[in-house]
Image 1: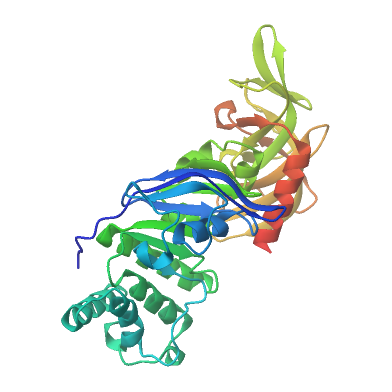
Image 2: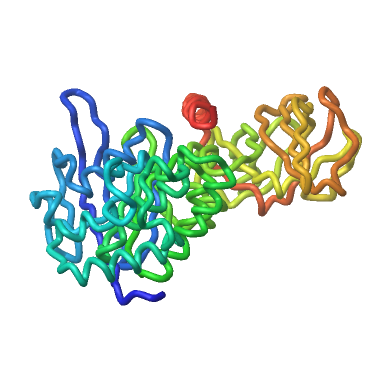
Length: 378
């Protein structure tokens, strides 16, 4: 089934939301292309859901403007914005069948009875629930209820679909299955999707672009690859994926910039000077015995293994740096290549200089980021 629905463009121009002295979102600006899938990613209290609620019309911005397809909708009420919405808690009517739940918004939008019947059939087919029309919500599993909520939201082909942590209450296998459903529906309908999540893997798997929030502000906007490979700051690097962090400083040595940490250093193309952090993703770090010797120009540091997690195809080592180097993080190696080390062993870490991203050093910010990320992952 393929629909002719066309997504809407969305523009946020410096929108902010204040609740008395508390700032929930500050100067959020974003341009979303028609048909794009954009995730708002961040920990609790970061401003992502507040931003979604302002787009939907549940909250009015304290300042700034919101435009859909070039039309300023900042002061337009919810029911006139032509937006589909999928909530975390399903929000199904318990006294209505699956069919009646999906039909409800069609009635509100003035569809005729034949049009409603066709749209309900199409939506239920899209989410693979055609045989569940007469079921009541209480007779469905959590995943089936979420698919009904999705069918209800897409039944009238909204050009803009907002999704607020729709999969967070489901188990991992079901989340991954429904992620596939959401990707399929997005491709088929061409609807513009704004998707709120605190799950980094979910955002990476679903999105054309990701907007990373922290403390009410946008930290970075980019494709999953851009954010993973070239984070703008320490918070984004720690929040989006695992990594090794090496604390040090960028110094000028004989006219060129070098990153120095403990006993290791290497030339860098850095736009920062002074305290800095080198961030290396876990798949780009080699872990070997403490006496391992790196090649010329290959940075290496000593570390102590703090934890080992066997993951089938790979092994994850959590390490702290040693011998004057400060930092630590995670190294991942394939099961076949992982060395026979134990918790407490000393090891040697090495990486190619081009795989290290240099970020401005800010130990306080790093600590705040770690605290927020730990809260999300608990």
